[in-house]
Image (tube, rainbow, N blue to C red; front, top):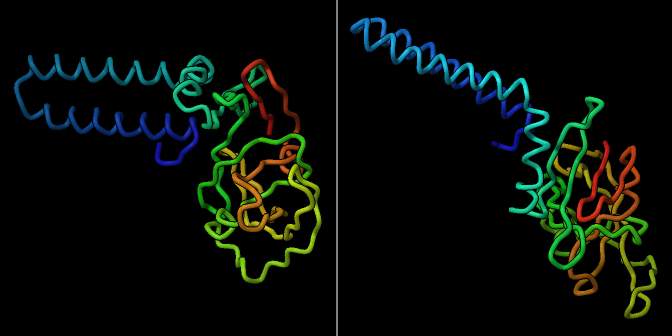
Length: 207
């Protein structure tokens, strides 16, 4: 909701409905008592239900996570772990790989999770969209690919966001032209998490 995390979304919704409840009470206080009490009771039940949902938001989010991931496998869903911390969950795509909707310098970038890549790699198009000056890049670093030796450029992002998790001043590699079809989320970024694991068709990242 509006780019907010799950906790912030619940708080915002709670406050909006609470204000609506108070405003409705003030408005109805100027009318007839009988219908007003009935309407006020309905709003009271709505607010109490919202409080109950907010109080149990952690297990509800964990319960809803598989549904959210099924609807959008590339979505990074934040859930609470049994110890009160948080985890980020990503679903395996139809192609058998994990894809992540991230933000490079605030720009949406679709990453393919590649645990075999030592660094996070941007395509030239994604690097340009992220605001990097591609004319100043020096493609002088060799790397062996399936098609032979290619040369990449070293660069840095001001920020890289994976769900609600944000890194600042992130080193990345940029591949030239058509050398890469999609940007890669490599181990230089994944290892910045405290831990990560794969559970069946779910990848779990622990900030």
